[in-house]
Image (cartoon, rainbow, N blue to C red):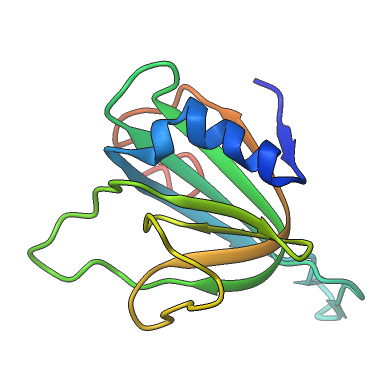
Length: 147
């Protein structure tokens, strides 16, 4: 499936509608990377731009689609708060907003960037976001170790 860019709130509303506000979904995987790297000669290469990227695989208990991938580019903040033990991590409703040239996503419905609650919930902010439908259900990992 082709990537779809999110630039406006109308663009952000599309995956919310297609994916049912992420209802009965779960964040299955996340992968973070940069353009920084160290060569075999031990010299470091550092990008001169905001080079943080994150991919999320989100699965849900519904069809058409059952899984989507979110690709955040130029990430400015990733706030991860794990679900407490003895609680499930089911998403009941997520938030996807475009504000002031930034895109925000949280697995918490009604979350707002002006009251980020850093200690209470997971959220991400990036300058760019793309999404696509994928056929990746089950426990198999797609980003990380294969065993």
